[in-house]
Length: 603
Image: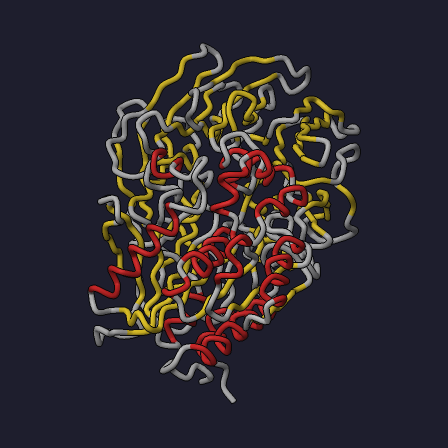
C-alpha cells in the first residue's frame, strides 16, 4: 500500500541553514530531519562530504561549529523540557564531551564565540546568568539578574554574531530591566570585566541586536529598532556612541541578516504581508538593491566569505530548501514532497473596521463552499507566513479550506498591532479569527455548518477559548499543547516563558490580574463547550505545561463531554517525524468522525 500524500510531505526531509564560523567557513554544521528525526549533521563545504553527528531520542535543533571549526557544538535536552547543556564532538567524529565547564544545567539563552573567549547565557529557577570562559578555562559568572537576559542575536539562532564582537573585545546582551521581554534594551560590556561600555534604550519599544561588523576592531553593531512602528535597521558605533537609524523606505518589517565581509554593506530581510524579500544595503550610499528570490518565506540568510548568500527559502506549496543566491541548492536531502496547494494572501475587516491580513488555502479551484478550518498560529508573537506546513496541506487534502489569520498580537504588522494583547490577552485574537471565518463564509468559500477551530500553543489557547466562548460556531476543535488553565501553569513555565507571560500581562503574574483571568482563562469556560475536542499534549512541555492542560481535560471528563487525549513523551513539539505523522493521523481520523463530507486521505 502506498504512503498517503499527506504523510509523504511530512517525510520529505528539511534542514535549517548550515552555520559556519567566520574563522573556518569551510566547515558547516546544520540540523535536519533527513534521518527521520531532527539531528545534528556536518557539511565540509570544500569537498562536499556530510556526516550525521547525533542520534538523540528527543531530537536536536540548536547546533554550531566551534570557532576553529574543529568541533561540533550542540545544546542537548534530555526530556523535551528544553533545559540542558552544551556538548561537543570533533568535527570528523569521536568522543562527545560537555563543552563548557562551570556553566550550570539550564535553559539556553545563547552561546557566542570569538578568539580566546566563549560566552554562554542560561536561565534557571534562580534567574538569568551570563558565564564567560577565557582561553578554555572554567567559565565564571559575569552577570546575574532576576530580569530576563539573553545574548544578542540569540533568537535568530545559529552562530551568534550579535553578541561578541569579531575580536571578542565587546559583548552585547539584551535585557528587560527597564521594561519587559517584549521591549528589551541593549547593553554592551567588556566581557572580561563586566564593565558597561554602552547602553541603548528606546523606552517602551523593542531593540534587537543582530550582528557586529566582521572586521576585527570595528565596533559597529547592526541592530533592529521600532521607532517608526515597524522593525527598521540601525547601526550603533560603540567607538563613538553614535547611533544611526537607516532609512530603507520599505513597507513591512525590515531586519538585519548579516554584513558583507568588507563591512561596507548589510544584508536585509524585509517581510511584508507574510512574504520575504532580500536586499543589499550599501552603507556609504544608502543604495538598496533587491536580490532575486521567488515569493515565499526566507527563514534565514547569511553572507559567505566570497560575498555570495546562502538562504533558507520555502513557500506554502513547496517545502523548505537551502539555496544560494543563484537559486542552486546548497543541500540536497532526498525525496521532494508531493505537489501542494498555494497560499492566497487575504485581507478582511474585523468588527472594529481594522484590516486584518492572513492567508487561506483551498483544496481546489471549484469555489466551494468547503468545510473550513481556522488554524490559529502560536506565539502570540509570531505570524502566519507563505511557508511550508505539511499539516495545513493534510487538512487541505481532506477537503478543508484552511484560514490562517494574523490576528492582533501577531508580529510583522507593527508594534501597535503586536502590543494590542498587552493586558488584553484572549480577546482580540478571537475577534479577528471569527471575522476571518465570517469573511470566508460570505465569499462562499466556507460552509459554516462544518467549521473547525484548531491550533498549537497559543493557538491551542485560542482554540479552547473559542470552544468555550463561541460554542455555536464550531463542529469540533483540535487543541495542540494548549494553555488550558493560564493561572495554574505559570509556576511550571521555564523562566523565559514566565518573563514573557508577565510582559503580556503588563508586568503582573496571572494571579495578580484576577479580573482578566476571570474572562480570559480558558478553563473558566470549559463547562460551556459543546463540540468534541482532540487534545495533543507533551508530558515534558515547559511552555504549556502538562499539568495545566490536563486540568482542562479533567473538567471535560467530569461532565463526560466528548473528548480525546493523546499524550506524547517529550516537550512542546516533537522532533521525531514519525511522531508528528502519528499526531496528524489522529487529527485526520478525529475530523473524519466529526465533520461530514470530508475526502479520503488514506491514498
